[in-house]
Image (cartoon, helix red, strand yellow):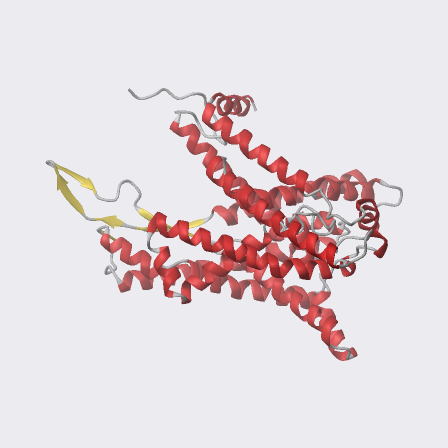
Length: 450
């Protein structure tokens, strides 16, 4: 503990790092304050009372969006859409990059191409917000906003002002995320999502504590202790999933430079292939697919038979729901890994840099090997990811409250662990550049090499 405190002091002693941390924290605080501002024309008190009387969500995509926005989605905040339109735009641009030659060219143009791609993503974010905004405004009553909360009705003025503010809120959230990435520490968009998820953590834990400690509650303090221990075990499993890699050995051709022999590509002698290259995207895709049937049935069909089938997709804790959910996650893990990890390009880059995998010909054979290795490690990675995704449904069966169970796996926990690890790695790079030990290692200030 003493070493950890010393490391924190070292972090605070670096002016540049301290400014970055304060800027990041300041922007996140601004985002959280903005998320508490209700759309004009709505009674925030009535909405708060209505939300407090509702039970926990069912784990669908609407609950996931609400968690990502820190509750702003259910409170009809000006940040109700948050960074979700930006994430949707980023996914669309990334997927379209496979089919559209212009986007493929931008991906190969380095920094200039990245800037153009970012600009396209920004405009697409506004376009998506202009579509999602009216849909959200129209669905406010079905989301649990009572009619008495609409102080001025749902006329044209309310629609226009709400659409403008929702669009402005999403653009402002996008701007905050980009500024955190450029001027602060960590990935800004991911940090804004993480702070929204963490915002619901205290209330979820308090509800669980009250349920276990009140008269008639199951387990009492001992059960809470067991749940906390299990929660830390799940976090450790998430850390393993996020950080696990398969190292593919690589050798580089040597050449003589000024009378010395050196490696062309430096010290790294392996290609790191991640066990879970797709991240949380398979869960998001699968959850969106699972949400579609119940939404379509509610809007279009009246048949009892069709509605009973659709009910299976709405049963968050049902066996059929979770089996199908896990299967979709495995399928999307392979799909997203295949489109985001260009093994042929990796093989070509390796060949141009003078590198090769021992015993394998450079070029196509190397690409085939990387693709085969990636497919082999994606299978256990996708199984592990599917298990973590459906774990909250199993936790609920043991008497855990719905809100608290969402932190036992799924998208929320994976995002928190992934963002935390990425931020710590960036802090460590600043410390090591100043000859300090990393955040998660023991030790004191290192001596500079002169």
